[in-house]
Amino acid sequence: MDIGPEAFAGAEYYFDETPISVFVEVGMFLELIDRINVKGQGGIGVRYLF
Image (cartoon, rainbow, N blue to C red):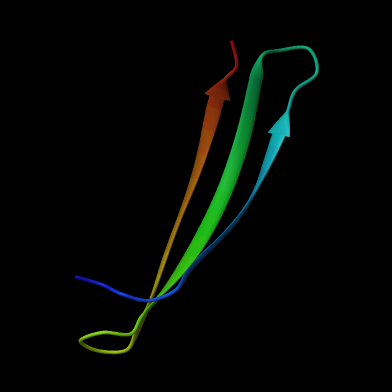
């Protein structure tokens, strides 16, 4: 089990002519219980808007 603060940031772009958006996000997690450790994660994606 991991306990600690977590923060995310990201951006998204919507296309004017098509119902599609693209996004990117990154996150950091500071583990405080068991041992102090910093973890990172992220993702990119495409969404179809209906």
